[in-house]
Image 1 (spheres, rainbow, N blue to C red):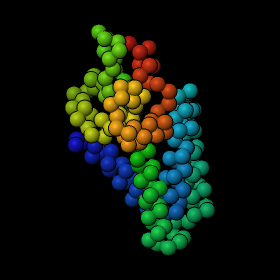
Image 2: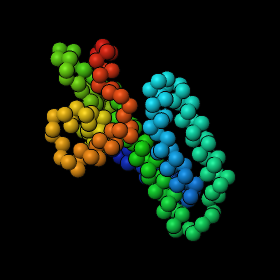
Image 3: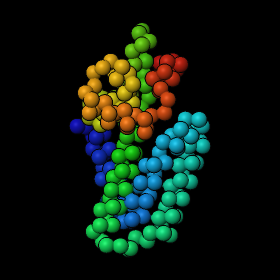
Length: 184
C-alpha cells in the first residue's frame, strides 16, 4: 500500500461522510452521479469539453433536486444517514475507479504489442507510488479486462466482477488508441 492508495481511500471516506451528513439528498446525488457515469464517459470520449460540461450540469441538477425534494433534516436520523453514506460510498468508488483506469497507456517502442499500465515514464516521485499501488493494480485489471480474459488467467468470480466494472467505466478499447500515439 502506498500514499496513492491512501489518497484514493480518503476520497471514498470523504464522499461517504459528506453524503451521510446530507442524508437522503446524499443518496440521490451519489447514486445519480454513479448512474450518470457511463453516459458522461461516452460523451467525454466524443468531445472532452462536452463531457466536462455534461458532468457539471449533471452534478448541479442532482444537487438542486436533492436540495429541493429531500431536505437534509428529513426522515429517521440513523436510517437516512446510512442511506446517504451508501450513496456517497457509491460515488467515491466510482471516482476512484475512474481515476485508477484513466492513466495513460504506454507502448513499448521495440515491441509494439507490449503495453505498460501504469506507464513507466511518470515523474520519479509518482512512478514508484503508482507502480506499487494496490488500487492502481486493481484498476489495471479492470481497464485491461478483455486482454486478461482472452489469456484465460482469471478465476470465474473475479472475471464476472472485472467484466462488470470494465463495462461500466471503460469506453472503447484504449489500448488500441495507444497504438496510434507515439511513445516519447
